[in-house]
Length: 396
Image (cartoon, rainbow, N blue to C red; front, side):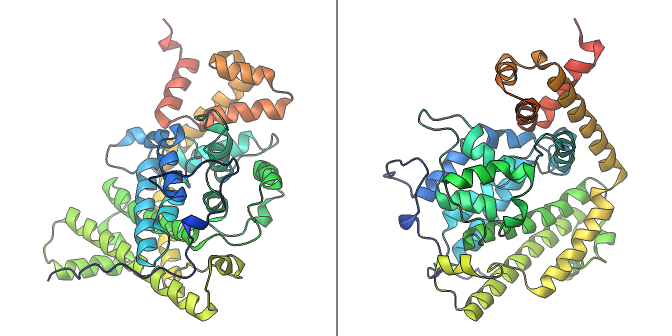
């Protein structure tokens, strides 16, 4: 059977319009070759922090295998899904892709284990949140331009990075969110409203990507079996469907076909539910999307329930598997020991970081510099730095 010919979608009335962007905090001239949102995407791709995602943990530490997802390949998969959904729904696919590419750029090494440990290290020193760190990377920490710090992204991209999961007013009292509160005081991002439909698409694309690739990686790593997954909602019916369509298919291709079908099923569900909500709410503009009292882009109730059961299964059988727990324990010790040493003896840090710590006023400000340095490390660099600092066999 041949594929149905692609038909360009009609632009949705609630899509963002790049030609009407609210602009950048530091005004710049227009590009002759790219929309403002496409320009944002390119700035993210060229950022140093984005490149370092290639060796940052998704679930498995980057050196554990070449075929497992890293934070970079995860971000690329999220971006692909976000762009496809946005294009099919008549939204601005450049903006959706941009937010998807940026959403994890502030993640520290070793995935959530690294985030948990930095949160603990910074508990009484200002806190740590990977979403806030992402915002700080794109607004402050990246140093690439002579006229401003950060990447000077459009208002719509900044809003989407901060609010892609919904309004954030409940978080603004947390010490770790102070950087966003301070930035918002000078450049209002409307923190009490929903973000654009494109940002919401990026958020759901994240859910689609990680649930599917964690199934794939979990089986490859030997933490899960296809027989176990056959009994789990959402992925189980996809395995049966693939088995019925291709009797005797070898296990690797069966796994890949089931994951492919699950991605397609979840994508179609998001599009159907979002169109249903848009019609029910009578949404006719991007501003009306922001003013809604619930998300516009969402899974159907049945899909959300199945996805919750799949996520619970993965949490118990994969994310808390003893092999993953051992890696998490090692990772947390690596970061904790380096954090404590750098804060106590900043002169063992590279000269530029040492100078920043010495110039900082107060323990909290010094700790933030140490935290930024560690958060920017790749898995491999963190492991090597720790070995150089704590293993006597490397002296010579």
